[in-house]
Length: 203
Image (cartoon, rainbow, N blue to C red; front, side, top):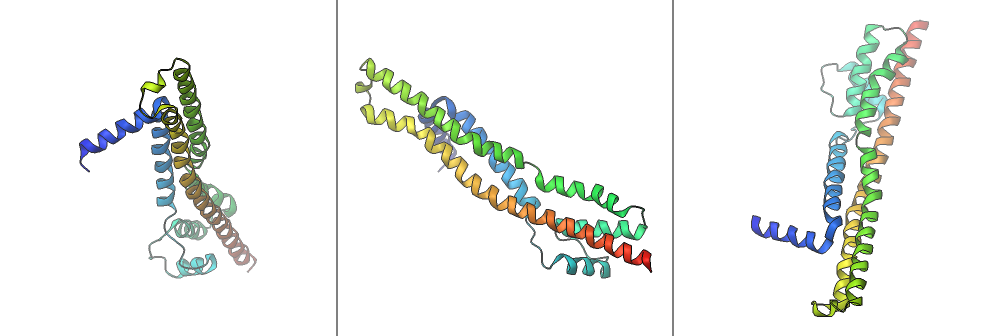
């Protein structure tokens, strides 16, 4: 398909969906921008457990961090080496940026998933009203498809709303589970570093 055919297809979608198609298109763009950003931030998998990663980066300080947990471990080790007082508070402040980064656009994605089917339903209601208004004035019979065509056009927006929401919901669920796992890993890193510091002070 060339550019003119894509433009024609988009115009047909806007005509079929009516007034709710622009907001639905905006929801689609916002949804996949948010999902794409969150996937990119959390894309690198862990190659080992948190304890093993901590031990590895303590022994290999020159090795690059391959994921967000590894970056947090590297920063935590540096803070520990500096011998800062109240290490837990400093780790909480440092790791807050990582927690904020992996949670970015989460609310936006949830809102779009909720709004999209409602916009689709609104489009269907508007389309059904127009269909019955046309039926009342008998103008619908002059159009191709008759009543069935008018109802089919009205239901198109509901289909579009669900097409946006369902894949978004699945992607959001997967990313949310990954976010919770990373948050647990960061909490474990803080506990391990603080425990090591306590043991060193006792000696």
